Image (cartoon, rainbow, N blue to C red; front, top):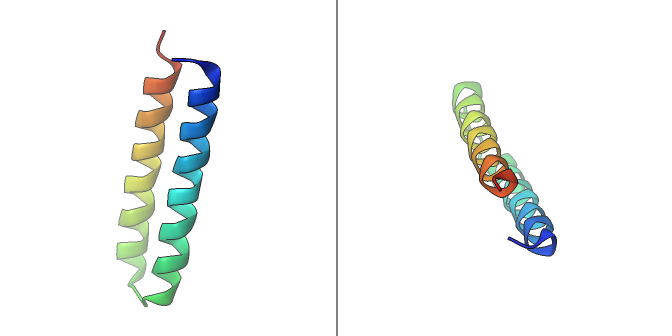
Length: 55
């Protein structure tokens, strides 16, 4: 995958996380839910990063 695509996908991922965070702040969720969502976002990001760095 060309370098430009990797950067684009990272930008999209960061945008998605930011959108989810702002959406979440509008809905009053419990701390447990917050942590669960953050954890799933971290896992998604790590998974995508791993895919992008694979040769």
